[in-house]
Amino acid sequence: MRAPFRFGLESTTRRTTSHTHESAHGLDEATTVLVNAASLARLGLYEDAERALASVPTRGPLAHQILDLHARAYAQQGWLLDAERCWVEAVRLVPTNTPFHAGLACVADHARPLSTRRIGWFLV
Image (cartoon, rainbow, N blue to C red; front, top):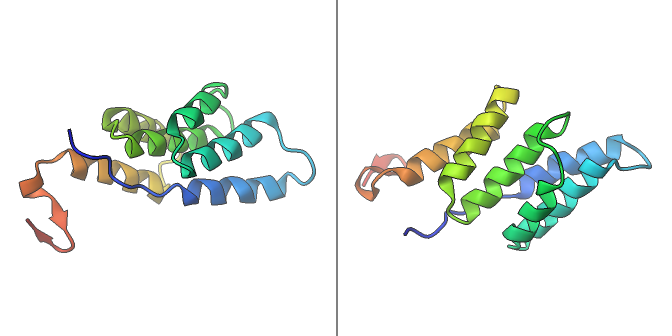
């Protein structure tokens, strides 16, 4: 089994934090869970982050962010099929989101045999 690849979790937190500032004084429950789960994932506590996210439905205005964080946590653990499933659904919800497409590209690249992977601008 290959080691999990690194996929940054910072962008999910930035998007969530900016959403948090927009909601002024009160955070709704889904936003609070998303922020906490992102913090857990950044600490490498992916299973704890997944448990936290499991309490939030993947529908509504934060669905794409929840799916993205699920995908990132799965990818960090090497669960690429689960990550791909989440990013595909996130892309379905927000087709123009570049980071979701980048996540799918990373999963696809990681799933290829080492001899055909891109490194920089050339093939190995």
